[in-house]
Length: 158
Image 1 (cartoon, rainbow, N blue to C red):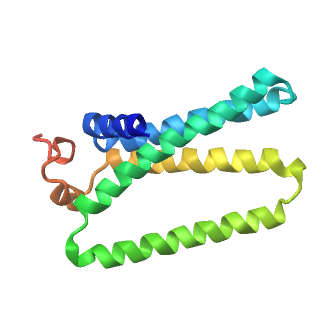
Image 2: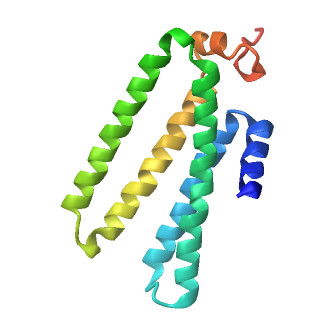
């Protein structure tokens, strides 16, 4: 566990906000590998099963590194006057996502629907990576004010 925390800390120090994008891309890549192994043939044999399970388990590292960066952005980039608003919105969106997840579990409750659910999962992570990269690549004036110490968000002299 300590090694894992050191890994996350190194990512956070080395890449700052880019670590979030790297984490999401890492997660989407490993989930894509798992989906490819699933569709390539039966995973009842030992090697495909181990590749499938390992890629899913390792994809959690990407999710957790993004989560650390997201927490840092919330803690350092949100003014104290808006912390309750941001926290409340975050809980609301998380609750909505959980409701959608439970609805999908009710609707697609047959094993034959696993491929569809896997595609939906990979698409969600890829979409999140795209949105985060887009946010990171096009900072607004407000983001430049909030993250004044980060050179990535500084105004470029033209």
